[in-house]
Image: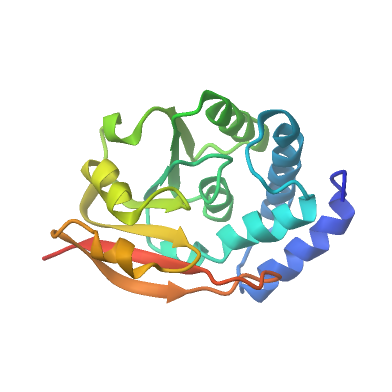
Length: 215
């Protein structure tokens, strides 16, 4: 598919959302489609993602991020590290308008895109930071810090651990769950759960890695 065919993508997205048993209203469906349309448009100039096909963007990006939504139940504030084109942060912000979502990336063109998405979709629960995560300082720490294919688990934890609230957790979206990465975690952190997830329309191994502080 060389152009963004909203009428073709909408039912694929709707079926996937139904399969994931997510309760999203018409406005949220519309925002997800608007987001994918913006991602497709900006990608031709800014190279935000290696996925070029809009239908693949719907499955590999939107539904892949939506498959993780239930893991963030109860979270009030979330940080998406290495947010890139907004995955999973923007998708989670659309699915959970009650949750504050901060996105951080070092690349200006990526945060410019995220700022545009926030404005065009009216996402008042989103904040965008252009910075290295290890240098970020915030007045209120986050319940959950997430990333998708961002870095080795130990780097992820080391670089952003100072931003996690007491009792908070990391949730990394990974393909496989490499044992060597888990083994390299700093001694005061541990993997509390490894959760396989099924992404509608995607025949690929996907896992959520939950990391918490050792008590």
